[in-house]
Length: 404
Ligand code: FAD
Image (cartoon, rainbow, N blue to C red; front, side):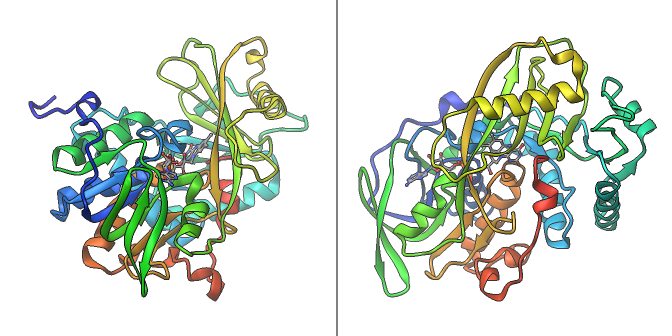
């Protein structure tokens, strides 16, 4: 480690609020902190405050299962997430902080011919953009993941897979702490336990932000409030096409290493990976109803356990250590909303639903670029809020499902 290494313990305690900031970022999750890092490091904008109503990165950044991949189906998404993956490849150097990026590959399973056909399309789209992705047959599936139950002749027979070698994981807390530490040492203020309660709006601009610790005037605002995005936007008078659903995950007791890739099955609504501690991290689809709650439920636990045991029957006696939930801000096309809003100095980083951890660096990079230049970065243009009026949707439902 270099001499200027800044561990997360050295992020300064919450200071008093200044009267004015050039940029206020709402939400101290990975996305808000990444934007703060890029603003301060690459654009020299340092009079920045990150306002976080709870504790640093305690929202979905703390709760996600950390899958990073770019195996989407549309040109816009693949281009965007491909850059996200390459930013992860260099992140530990960028932050001088070990984010434990582990590029172990992601295997998505096909249990039907129809799924295989859609995998061919995704693979060809990915190859076109230069990602490492291919359709594999059952023999290759077994080579990649020898302990899988292929269920030959059974209800969930594995007919092949989509093998995405670029896929991986990173330590979620380290990503947030790394960005926070880098931003803080360049003068960005991180205000924990500071909730945004409302806005003063003059004409088509936000002039001030009302918080639980006082009012601050502001040049630009970035909204990156995770599961509260719909609510916070409403405070600014912006109606977002977002609905909130809980998303749950769980981990088992540690086991000897046997699972060296990420494995997911949309049919079973289950995906698994083994953490560096040996725990099996198991995730799946969202709860089937809208709710703003982080409680976890028995029915999802049973569903995830069923999927996990179907794929790896020898897990049937393994004990669960923890189960938890986050509140995900889902859009109708399973694609984020980034860039301009109806207010001229209010920029959106929303709709990250069940898929936004992987986008943390690339969203932060281009949101910072957008604010610094007061012009939406080209790569973000397709993800505008306006696409819901023009119906230029970017449908990524199939690429998301339970596979993240
Ligand atoms: P958050 O980390 O939620 O940060 C937003 C912050 O805003 C919060 O800390 C919150 O307290 C704060 N805030 C809210 N309202 C206010 C307010 N009024 N004032 C001030 N602060 C406020 N994505 C992937 O890419 N891969 C995965 O494998 C994956 N798995 C997931 C598994 C689960 C169980 C869950 C819940 C999510 C998963 N996701 C995954 C999605 C991912 O976690 C999110 O999309 C991502 O973390 C969003 O980051 P963020 O910084 O935008 O939001």
